[in-house]
Structure formats: structure tokens, C-alpha cells
Amino acid sequence: MTNDTSDRKIVTFSLGKQTFGIDMRALIEIREWDEPTPLPNVPSFVKGVTNLRGNVIPVVGLAERLGWEASAIHSRSCILVVNIAGKQAGFLVDEVNDIVAIGETEIQPAPEVETIEASVIAGLVRIATRAKDGTRDENGTMVLLLDLDALSLTKHLDLAA
Image (tube, rainbow, N blue to C red; front, side, top):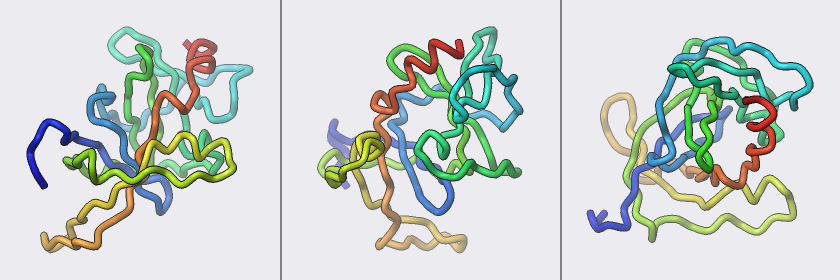
């Protein structure tokens, strides 16, 4: 991989058996799971709110937001705090995997599928994976890159914040 200016870093994480990635520039921090304060009259994927250094931010169950079964909370569950269009939100994910550099040319467009949720996928990229023994599997893993803006949480964030 070349180190030209088109390279960017992504944070990869798991939801169920699928690996997702978000642009590192959108990430504010990774937090341990902490039960948020629930809110009434919000969509079921909005888990509640939490306090981030004096700012109240909504916590979203990302699996539910994508229309999947809710994530089970376990020791590796965590919250990715991200910036979406100037607003902060936390996403509950099953596990953070790695930070990897990818080239813009490696990103494949998302297939055009007749579903609303397909539009939240900005593209796909195959990354090499590391085995527990330190060796690399060059066949790797297909990572779905999320388009945070397309998750259209802003109206829900305004309700929750």
C-alpha cells in the first residue's frame, strides 16, 4: 500500500459476525459500555443518554439501527463516540477490532440493493487480518464502511439531546 495522501485510517468493529468500519476522523473516543439513562418516546434503537465530559449524548444500538437483532451486552461491548454533522453520538458495538490504513482506491462501491439501509454503506474494503499467532491472512475480511451522515440520526439526536 502506498502512503500517499489518499490513504485514510478506519476503525474496524464487530456487530454479530459482520465487520464494519468508520473513518477515524469521525471518532472522538472509545468508551467501556455503561448503561445509559433511558428516555421516553424515542425509537427503540436509542438506548438512552450518557454524560461525556459535561455533554449529554445519545447512545444508539447500532445493530438495531441497522434493522438487526439487538447486541447482547458482554465484557467486550463498547461505545464508539463519533461526530456526525457536528453532533456527538455513541454507538453500541460488540467489539472494537483494529485501526487500519486503507487507500481510497481499495474501496469498492456498495452494491445497489433495493433497501433503505443499503444506503448507509459508503463502500466495502477487504483488509488483511491478523491471526492470534501474529501471522497475516491476506484473504482477510470484508469490511462494510458506514456512512455516518446517511444513518440519518440527526432528527433522533435532536430528540435525545
